Image 1 (cartoon, rainbow, N blue to C red):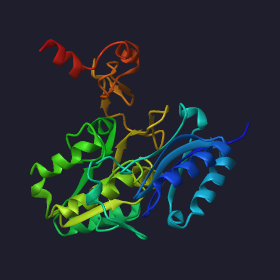
Image 2: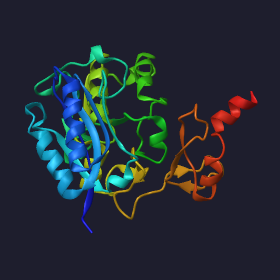
Image 3: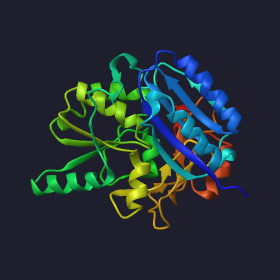
Length: 300
C-alpha cells in the first residue's frame, strides 16, 4: 500500500490574478488526485491537501515553482486523501477571514509589519530571557476559543472569539490593552493566522509581538509534549484532532458530563457551527441534539 501524507502550507505573496492561480491549483490537484482545502487571495495561498506521498511532494514542488511561492512553509503529517470529503479550491479577499483585508500589507518578503518570527527553540529562549529580567511572556491564542478547549500553551490568553472574524472587535474592545507593553507570543495551528494577527496587534499599539514560525504544528514536531504546549491540536479534516506523542495531556472536559476528552464535535443544529468537547459516551447523543448554548437559548 502506497504511503500517504497530508501537507499543511501557506505563503504570503502579492497575487495580481488570484483567480488564475485558483484555476491552476485546481487542475494541479485533480491531476495528482489530491483532496483538501485551498484558499487563494491577493495576499497569497493557504491550504491543506492529502494523498499519496509521491503525489503530495509533486504538488509541493510544482506549487513552489511559482516565484511568489518559493519560500512556502510546508508541514507534513500522517493522513490521506480520505481525510477530506472533497477538493475545494476557492479565491477569497483574505487568506484568513479577519474581515480586514485592507489592513494587511504584503510584499515579496511576506507580511509587512508583523510580529517577530520565532523558531520553536527561540520561544524557549525568549521565555528564559524574560524570566531572568523578572518579566513574563504572554502566549496569545490566535484560534477560535473552542479549539483551545482541548489544547493550548500553558497559561495562554484565549480570546473569547467564536470565529476569526471576531478578533478585530476583540482587539478593539480594550480588554487586552494591559498587554501592549508586554512580550506577546501569538500562535495558531500552522502559522498563517498568527502572521496576520500579529500584524493587526502591532497596528493597534502592541509593542513587543512575536509569532511562532510554523505554528503549533512546528512547535509540536520539535518538542512533542515536553515543552510548553499541553493537550491535543484541533485540525480541519476528518481526523478532528492530533497529538504529538503518547504522553499528550487530556485537558478537554465533556460538555455533558465533565469527563476528560480530546474530541471536539459540531453542534447538530445546522444554524450553529459551535465546536465543543464531548467524551466518547456522549458523542453519538450530542450529534443528535444541540449544544449547551443552543439549549440555553431555546429555554430562554
